[in-house]
Length: 458
Image 1 (spheres, rainbow, N blue to C red):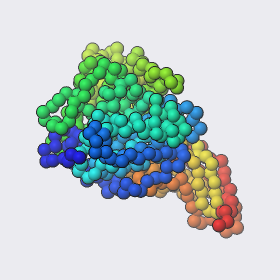
Image 2 (tube, rainbow, N blue to C red):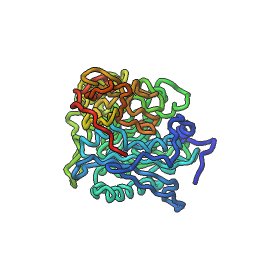
Image 3 (cartoon, rainbow, N blue to C red):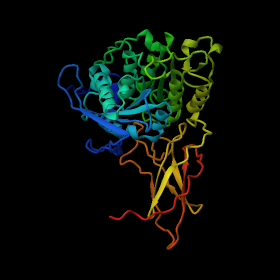
Image 4 (cartoon, one colour):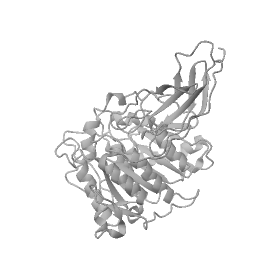
């Protein structure tokens, strides 16, 4: 197992130094897992000391949309480098917002969690040629068998990756372009040309088929765009080089600079999820068929570092502009690169299956695809009773019901869909309703009323 040294070159190695000291809330022990009961399934593979095989143990957790008959794809949410980020991957499949995207397209939601030791070499998993490609494909077969969905092993992939996870996702595009529907690369990209300043990082080749895969390079402005010479300043030069190489050959690649963040994920999900939605809508085939070609007649282009997007036909030098799949995404992109306030006018889904036992309420909820879930309003007898939670936690962007870690995953323990009424009126049988609130502040219609029932006898 290789260790990092003081001369650790390249963007991925540079980022590893920072991830060695991640946010404390990101560090639950590896033996603290969210439950993996249907519709969740998990496999774990031990580390290997054989050449070419993955040198770290890894957990893969998948969520299967309840009631889906045949999966059309799998969405992969890949964490970044370092021990803290690796541990944060344990909750990726439990994210209600990402589940909404997966459910819409009859896709599984998969989140790996590599057991990378502190200060160990991130390249040993984030370069898929070092064993993580093979382990990933094995997990699809094994999880397909566990879940009763063997088609999981053959379906297309939609990839999201942060930092070293972006390096991994981009590498998988270059290795398997015919399998990838789209890939979002947050703060990390693969190397396309050998660079003597990036020792230990092996370059990939750029196959022609990869030019047809929609890609988005997404990073924070403080990662070398507006702030130079600081900890993550090498991220933008790496992204710029990757973009110029791919776009210069006609590749379907864009750039979205987050104007508020550094290496954290910020509010990127409010553009990433609609962008992936657009790509999956255009590319996912019927079960068993090959991916559809991405339509290019509706594409818009935009200045790489932000500004006004326009129809591709209006650009004199289209291969120097960021590629966007359609007008709706172009409008969202313009809002995102300005202040990340992507407009949403859709109401969140109504909470369902509200139950009251004694004075404890529980319910089920699906996230709003565009804006996720920020909170819930509890009504008692038709009147406001409480907000749940009083204030969502997210140090890196909009407050969100499940809270968010550095690598865009929910915190542990998972926040329950539950509320206890501590001041019911004695002798009165109250009725309760639940209202969902998305991160744009829009409220759902109220749920059906629920009346308390006696708790089961012990």
